[in-house]
Length: 539
Image (cartoon, rainbow, N blue to C red; front, top):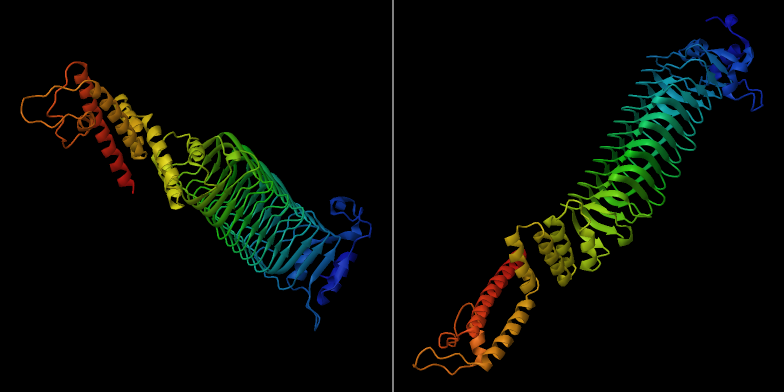
């Protein structure tokens, strides 16, 4: 390229390049310098993309002792900035520029690249390697920002960037690798899908205050994302469409404090099989319309839903199925609208609030070491009975074991008694009858003092009845002196003998009384044995 073929702004850029000088083509009036009005800019602000490409690929050498660079502000760049597969050894810094066509940087090797407050119809940087930072701060990109397979050794700064590609990929970052932080904050917006599946980030991922929109699908698709430090989707973060973090790994904590997720009747947050080293905060204003799922997630610290809101009427609103967490704080601002699924979750400490219990739960297989507040057994039973699957033995046994572990044995027995009563509702009629007898007599073995009470009542009745009419002696042989108390006791005892029952034989109505006492003693003995056996087997 010959210098005499260059326009005035191109010549200025050509001459500034060897020493890394800046060329500013702005007027100083913010209204006229807005890249959105580039169609009205005059020819003295137009620079051909091929001139920039020529400089970046070595058409000019750096001056001795200087670092060559392309530094251009306020230009309208025409043509295609095509650096596909190129090796660029100098920095590129474009500020407040407007591109007529999408730059093509696919599989290029670049130095630090700054494209600030620019307007682009798209940017293709698939497979690009950037030795240093990639800054697109404040830029507007329509038609898609493609960074799939790219590797950035420094920071990726998308602060204040506006991505516009409705119904398509606003950001294509599949398998993107960034060694430092990724900033998508300070007014970052995306209309279209933000894709980061399989991406690796060596620092923090910051979506603080970002607004994502893709109502027909995923607003943020980041399955298998790997972030070495923290992930921030808070500070006014909103997503109209699903947020998908399935199988993602977070080396620090995940903050969704105050986030607003909107995907009614569908999945608002899919964090299935998520692995978080410390905590997950869906709290303090967190509001999700649609399913929030942590099925199979592993959280090293706390999962907090304190002060949050979740609604998915008619379906599962919160899934903690197979969740593993040290602490779950389920104290939302109001009762969750929809079902909460805890089935087969393993939680060290479960904390909730009776005032915000959901109407429906699934608790089978749920394991926890402690529950806060423990409450009285009758109150916790109301929690268990919200299980929409009906009677399941495991939740009762787990709750009873928790009571026993903190020394509340009586509350544990109350839970196990309630378990037998609730189980009885699903039995056959004969089994129900036998269960009712065990319940009334000894409380299925969990109320053993009832047996003593029944024994004393029957003993008193028999003593009074046989005091009025002594049964006749069976024969004329030597017999013990009749005693109504011991005679009644002999009738009640199913085993052994005090010598009274075999010596005397009542007749008429008294025979019926004696037979009823014998039958009652037999039933009482069997139920006591069954109840004691059950209790001992649980111990």
